[in-house]
Length: 146
Image (cartoon, rainbow, N blue to C red; front, side, top):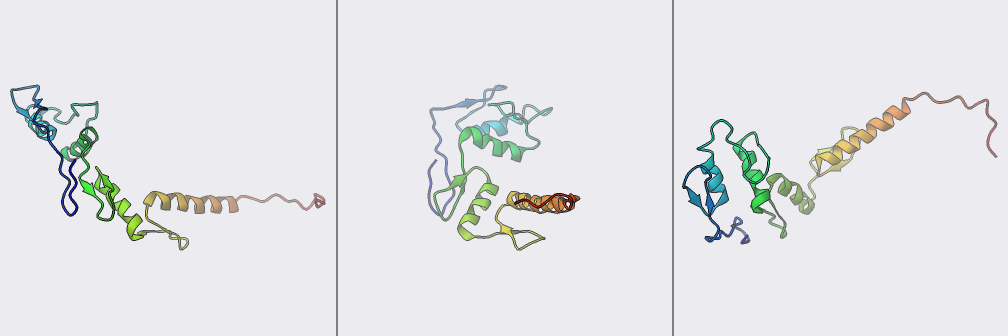
């Protein structure tokens, strides 16, 4: 991958590696073009990864999945060298630079950058509430500990 600051990531294609369609004579040096071409052959179940058993629901999921095999990471952080194959990962990463915490607890002032952390935090409130709701034992008949 070639990285240019201020511009999109570009993948280097090797003209020596040629991908051929298993259904016809079509060939290309770009795996994504081969995938798009293969969709024209298989209308019954057009979406299945040629490298593994993954079967996505739509073409955008397949495009994201193919990045696992190709190593493509088109999303670049403008603040550091971080790069990722998934745009939502970049959005979450950028919050480490900006300090943005868009998720707030409705029960206390807690704020966080990740929704999963908020969900875990709220479960903590629920556990405390349920513990407080448990009946307490009557300890009046026990002598105090020395």
